[in-house]
Length: 212
Image (cartoon, rainbow, N blue to C red):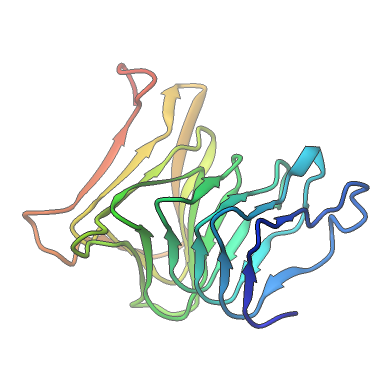
């Protein structure tokens, strides 16, 4: 599969095709994937859903639009940094984002803001590595995890979560019957490298103030 991919020129990429003949075809980029402003990747276009994940070996930059699949397994796996610019849109569609890199990975909204995921999975091969929201000047990023069933935050394999002085929110508990869970399969860490006076891990429900 290709090394670097840049989707540009107001292109709309429909990987499953309208007859879904490619819905199970390998959909991978070995290194960086950039979606330019005005261009889109729709893994669910017109109900033609991918049933395998998009795999990005290194950095993902969303300046246009990325929509994950509407069916099981149509997730995305990213080995590098996740960046969405002010012109970009991301539609998680109740699918998972896996962070799978060998080293630390950053989640960034250019200009600052909140990046929302349905399912947030830290699945890294090396211990002592982290996924963390960007806390740089000009691009302060918070993370919200909004899935309402199953294990919405998972720390599996190796690697952990670093708040990095920002806020990570599980807004996933609208009722007893609609609740998101945290899953770990070993000794994992939710830490804050910026010290005790910054950084926050929240569990709340915006839709039902009587929960979680």
